[in-house]
Image (tube, rainbow, N blue to C red; front, top):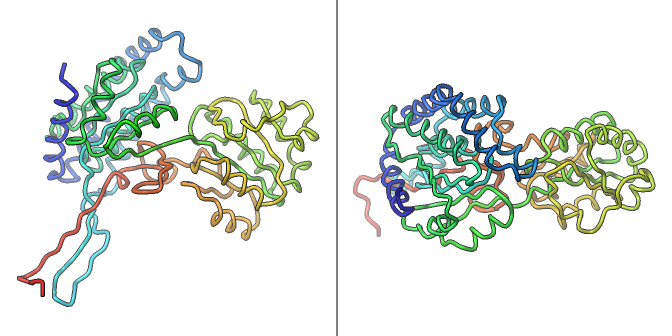
Amino acid sequence: MNSVEDIAKRAKAASQILRTLSGAKRADALNRMAGKLLECREALFQANAEDLAAAPDLTPAFQKRLKVTEKIFDYMVNRLQEAAALPDPVGNVLEGRTMPSGLQVKRIAVPIGVIAMIYEARPNVTTDAAAVALKSGNAVILKGGSECLRTNRILADAMRSAAAEAGLPEDVIQLIESTDHAVVGELLKQEKYIDLIIPRGGKNLIKAIAEGTRIPVLKHYDGICHQYIAEDAEKDMAISLIVNSKCQRVEVCNALETLLVDAAAAERILPDLAVALREKEVEIRGCEKVRRILPDCVPATPEDWDMEYLGPVLSIRIVEGIEEAMAHIAEHGSGHTDGIITNSLSFSEKFIAGVDSASVLVNASTRLSGGGDYGLGAVVGISTDRLHARGPVGPAELCTYKWVAVGNGQLRK
C-alpha cells in the first residue's frame, strides 16, 4: 500500500499535468466517469450492502447516510454529467485592463492544485468531490470513513479508470484505503503537496483537522438553520415550507433546526403546523409562549437553541418582531442557512441585509441551499467560512486566481 506522502506526491504531479489540459478533456473524463458508474452498478450495490452489514451498530441516521439507494445512485451519475456540462471555470478572465503604459493586465481563474477530502459516511461525497475537483482542474485525495470503504473503493476505481481512458493522469483521483487513524495525521502533514483540505463530518472532526494542520482548511461547521415566520406570512405556504425544511431529509446540514414565529402570527399558524409536524413524527420543543398554544410540546431548554439535531426534532420560539428574530439568529445561528416567510418586501429586504449567513432565503425551503438548486451542479460542501469560499462550494469556488501581465518591453520607471 502506498504511503500517504507518496499519494500526496503523485497527486501534486497529476495536478501539474491536469492544469495544462483543456476543459473539453476534463468534461470528457467526467462523462466517462458517469458511464463507468453505470457499468459497475451491481458491484456498487453489493459493496454497499456489505458495508452496511459490517456496521450493524451504526445509528439509523448514520446508516441512512451510508446507504446507496436507487435515488442516490442516480444522483451520483447525474451530478457527474451535470458537472461535465457546466461552463469551464478555469481560465475565466475575472477582470482586465490596459494601463496607460500599454501593459495589458488581467486576473484569471486557475485551479487550486491538490484538494484532500476527509469525510464520513455519504458515498455521494466521493463522486461529488471528484466531479467538482476535476471540473476545476484540481487533483483530489479522498479519505472516507472506514465504514464506507468497500463502496468508496468501487467508486474510486471506476472514476480512475475513466480518467485514464480520457487521457488524464490516473492519479488525479486517489482513495486512501487504510483504516488506521494515524493516516489522517500523516495527511495533515503534507503541506508541501496538498493545497487545501475540506473536511465533511461532525464539528469535532472539523475542529480537530483545522487545529492539526498548517494546510488551509475549508470549514463546514454546524448547520443550525432557522426559518422566521413573519407576522404577515400566508399560513398554508408557511406550513408547507416548514415541513419541507425540516422533514424532506432530517439528517442533512441544511435541514431546519429552529423555527422562530412572530407573536402576531403564532395563534394563527402554530396549531395547524403542529398537526403537520406530528404527522411526520417530529418532536416539537417549545418556549413558554409556544407551550401556551401547544401545551403538549416538550419544554425547550437553553441548550436547544444551539442544537443541530440532524433528526426529527424541531425547537420553536415565539419572538416579538423581526428585530428579535434576527437577534436570535445572530446569537444562536451557525451562519449556514436562514430564511424568512413573508409577503412584505420591506421585511424581506431587512432580513436579507441583517442576517449574516452564507445563504439567506425568502419564501423558500432551507433544503434548497445547495449546489444543484443554485445552479452549481455538484458541490463538496457548504462553507461557513467567510474567506475564499462561502456557501455551496462548486467548481468555481475551487479555483483561485493569478495575475497575468503582457507587455512589449515596458520598464519600471
